Image 1: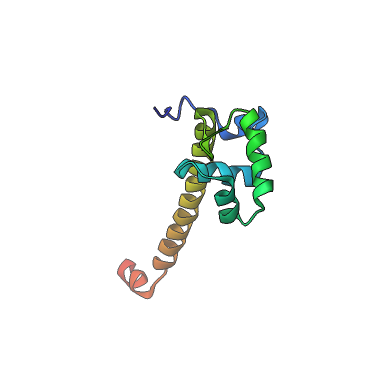
Image 2: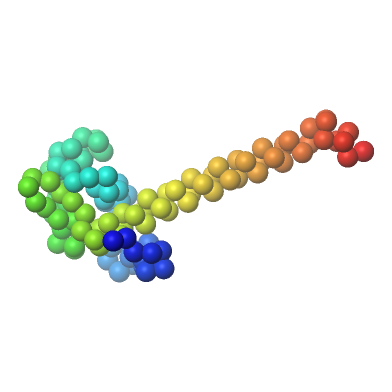
Length: 120
């Protein structure tokens, strides 16, 4: 069961409390939101060495963010909460970029010749 936004700790708060601070870890955890994966699969997607990815996964397993079973890595509830917040922050950022673009487009549209005549 997913927690509501009010129940989740803010992303920055999690980072301050010893949570992941690496973009690589963020990427790994977001990938694991899709499905459990082998370290080699994750490494291939991220263009990293499998041993490098495995060492990160092992460390974050000890911190309670991921688990390992049947040859694959998966998110724990703690990891899922964190990865969901990372993904949501990126969606919010992307939305704000498109919002700004839409506002710029509307601003330039209000300066067209037809709009100037209509106001006169």
